[in-house]
Structure formats: structure tokens, C-alpha cells
Amino acid sequence: MDNTHDGSIAARLRGVRASLPERVRLVAVSKFHPVEALREAYDAGQRIFGESRAQELAAKAAVLPDDIEWHFIGHLQTNKVRPVVAAATVIQSVDSLRLLRAIDAEARRAGRCIDVLLQVHVAREETKFGFDPDELPAAATEALTLDGVRVTGIMGMASNTDDTDRVADDFRRIRAAFDDLAAGAMAANDSFRTVSMGMSHDRDIAVSCGSTMVRVGTDIFGEREY
Image 1 (spheres, rainbow, N blue to C red):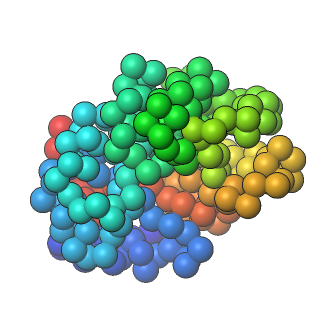
Image 2: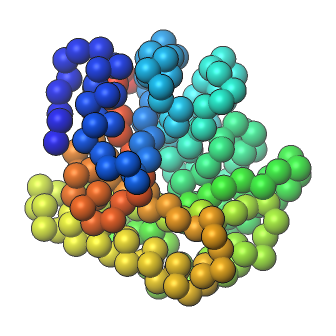
Image 3: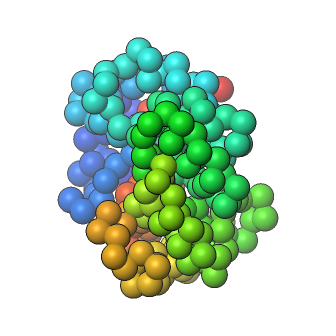
């Protein structure tokens, strides 16, 4: 993995892109980074950016070009759904039926249908959010009855560990959950094709385990400025 932190954002972005197969889409995780950093990545051709806070997403979307595809990737509280639905193209972190229903209601109120990913929990940390794999079919089935959301895939994170075998096992479980849905509840849904897994430190393993979208921040923008 190219883990360089020297050079420009554009150069690091090229390096990350070069490391990914063509089938894998790149979300540049821009949370906590200033608008100027995003603009540099935009000028280098990046169009998909990931944010994790409602206010920050809304503020950046208001001043950056309209052709950016904004992905909300953080834990979303139901009381923050409105500004996120207004600004985001995709909400990756749908981790409960309650949130799914809240997004649907807000999207319908706003006259739109928003793409979402169902977040699956396989990691050993209890602090991570998401559906257990065996809960996904029921969630997907309910989503198909809602007019304000369209489930286009799933998202997940591996355990935070240096044990690469464990990380690979987690990613394989996420991919298996996607495959089960693709063959089952979502079989008739042609837009269900995204497996969002893998970040700066583990994206190579994720890609080898079937990821179709990685979320990379540090390897593009450097360490975050909190």
C-alpha cells in the first residue's frame, strides 16, 4: 500500500487511484479537512467526497461545485437527517430501521429519493454501528417498500486490529452478506452493486476480498486537522 504523506494532495490522490482496480470507486474522505483541500482534490479530478458531520457536509456542499457526489459516512442521528438528505447524494451509514424510516420520510418530504447503503456490523468492537448480517434481509425487504430511499449496496468496517487474517475474515463476511442480499431480497434490484469497505490502512485487503468502493482520507489529505 502506498502510504506516503509527502507531496501534494493531487499527487497522493493519483497514487491512491493507481493502486485501485478500475472496478473500485474511490470516496475521498474529507471530514475535518478545509474546503481548500477538497478543491485541490476536485481540481485533480476527484468527484466523490465523504463527510461524517451534518453541519460540515452542508457547509462544504454550499460552496463547492454542484457536480460533487457527497457521501455521508458517519453515524447519523435521526435529528440530523434533514440537512444530510438535503446535501448528500448517498448515505452510507444506515445502521437501523428507525434511521432508514426517518431518511425515507425526509426524502419524500423533500421530493426526492436518496441512495443509501445498509451498514453491516461484523467487527469485534461493540462501539461500531450497523445491522447484524442476519438482520439485513428484513431491512432490505422493508427498504423496497419505501419510496424515499433506494438501497444500492452495503457498507462495513473491519475490526481495528493488526491481525490481517481477522481483518480479511471481516471483509469476507461483509462481502458474503452483500452476495446473500444480491441473490435474495435484492435480486430484482439492478442498482444494488456497491460493497463499501476498506480505508487508508486496510484498503488493499478489502479490495482483495471484493470491495467495490473504498473510503480513503489520510492517504489523500494527510493527517486530519481537528
